[in-house]
Length: 500
Image 1 (cartoon, one colour):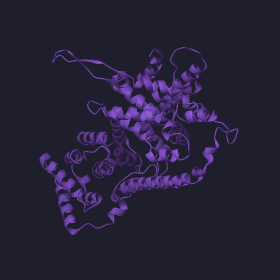
Image 2 (tube, one colour):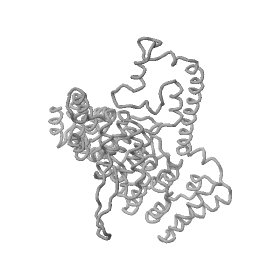
Image 3 (cartoon, helix red, strand yellow):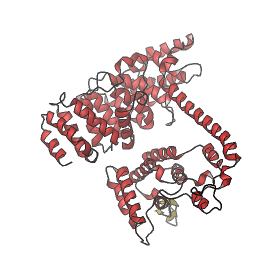
Image 4 (spheres, rainbow, N blue to C red):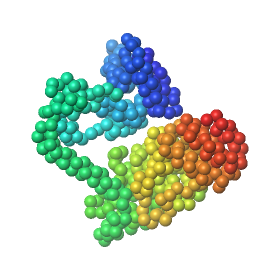
């Protein structure tokens, strides 16, 4: 256990645990292979074995006799929740280095502990499980090649698979330079396997099409809005709109939310059509906060309905903010986004950041709070990567047609946008290298325009401080950009750059 202390210290204290842990593991792996120490070698397999090692912690309970009860748990479950979450995020990031079956088993065991499982640990475990889960037909396809079972193909990182070792010992190899026997070139390889190939690719194509259909159902609103509602349903929706616009007490607002939800879930109608007619974004903030709280689907994995709630109630209000958002509305929105994080990204964050006029200070404050209180730093990093490096397809978002004029497909660089990025970096978010590269490009492009902006200067100082290891190749460009600025932090930026 002692040899793993430095790694656990990284997970406990490092601002960028995934990157540092990956580097430490690689260095330790190389050191272990070059030494003849009798200590248990540091490998990916031994790390997983340590995490899943069964423990028997004693839990004191003064209300019973005898005074102790025993519960068998994995070692990872005895660690602080923050450390568990960071370890699981690291395993998801570096999943190709580990045995996929063991990672899947670890994630499933954690998720089976429903009682008392921390919110972020649960999210990280689900993310890990999503990363390593594979369809069963892939293993069936692999087995058709005459190799050993497909379950045995995922082995220790940087080691030769057992099936390849076995084949090297086979007699009379078909090609002396390859460890394959003549049996592997039988009719089955070219006949049955080809049929399996076609079946597999057909299934993969179907799965891909299903995924695209899901995105289309969630993202393409125009198509469903062109389908007219039945007169009876339309009349009910207009009646609800009149009640929304007129102030409702909290009690009546709860009843109103239930009626809206019931109408939207009617199989005869499309919920987007109903919400477009009801116009819930015109409600007072107090009524809107009640609507948000009582329109939850109860299923945090569902995506389509939460997005519709956010883009029809919260998003239109935040897009036109010129003053700080009301505490009541913002608190309700944050609590909803905590339950529906993917919906928060596609139904709120992307359209807000891509506001046609650019974000202002009130919108910056809203986004900052949602990012800090609702998303894991790894999720924020992925959001920034998509925002800075992705195309229109990756940066897809949802909004009603009547609000399309408020949003653009391109980023509009303002003081508040640089302030938002500054806040994100200060939230210990580790940006990917391509995100940093894009930021350097935009910094150089905007340096003259924002030469007097203190927010731009503070962001640039934060960037060269937090991402110094990723900026060495950009030193000259950043120096040129910093020399254009004339603020209180210009000298500090240049001093930081000289130390790169």
